[in-house]
Length: 336
Image (cartoon, rainbow, N blue to C red; front, side, top):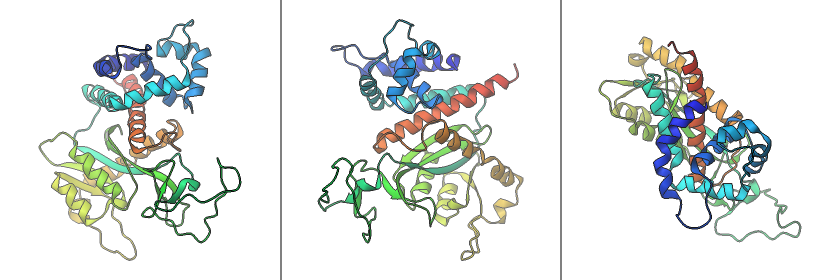
């Protein structure tokens, strides 16, 4: 893993120079900061404080980050402040693109066949923080840090309420009868050869959010001659989305949404009769492996950050870490 990471940090290092002032207290070296954040994702370390504790006694972690056995570890608060500077420099996006270029150089990316899908990320905010936008805070006679709030009989919606903890989050539910929670809509665009992530997007949940994110990610791909394909599940089977995909030069290999009240799918036999459609439907399941890794290993089952900008940064960085893990396996098994 370190042999993969070292050239990537050399490529991203010119961006680091503009993030730090020449005066004041010496900051954490950006390369070491990025290595430590990568360790946190790869080994599911749930907080910066726990990361500093493990760096204090784990010699393998110190070697990966670039600390000697005698070097003092950083204060968690200082580490967090320096991490926020990486957000201003769009370091996660640059690191993600560098990982993608490595995959492209080894011919591991498909440039014609893609899959899009989305998932919900639970925000770091509770139901108690979801309060009316214009109304004052309800009085509480108990613990002010954790007041008791009675929501019985109160109508709450994203149009009238906002979270005071994370205003960018929205109330959402995974299924019609499931429990509602505050969260974000995260979407990825993967290629079908090895399931590597090529584009990411984080936005507020909504009825059209998942499909709008898919079209926006398609526009960010490099233009290419010839028809390309896009696989997706039945949630994307709408006339507007299919028309938008075709307008961008992609053949929509979308799973038909044959609901009992909607017998006719937008994707007809002219598309489904081809062998490539069957292949896209089979390969599009690779996108679920990325979501599973990000939530189980990459600490995204429940977010530990607030604000869409920071959540998007963390999601992009975690996607880059997932691609690195996949690249390590693919390059190890590739014929020499």
